[in-house]
Image (cartoon, rainbow, N blue to C red; front, side, top):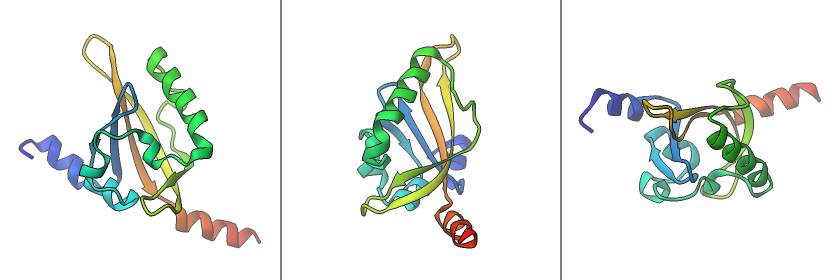
Length: 130
C-alpha cells in the first residue's frame, strides 16, 4: 500500500468490495475479510457468488447486469438490507450501498459496494416485535 487512497480503503470500518463488469472480485478490504470470513487471497478473482446466498443469486445478477448495461443503479446509493453468506456457511444480514465505477469517458468499469453487518440489530428488532 503506497497511496492515501489505499490506506483509506484498508482502514475503513465497512467492507469494501469492487467487482468488474463480469462480477469478479478485484478489491476486497480488511473489513470485508472480517465480515465475510474470506481472506483477500480467497476472494480476489472469485465471483461475487461466494457471498450471495443461492436463493438471491438470480435476482442479484439480473440487477447487476442491468446496472452494468445501462450505467444506472436502481437503488442509486440508497442503503439496502439484504442477506449475505459467510465463508463458514451461515447467513448474515448486511446493509449495503452500491455505486457504479466509471472512467473519465463514462464507460462502466465495475461496481463497488460498502457493507456492514446488521445481524444483531435485525435480530433485536424481530425479538422486540414478538
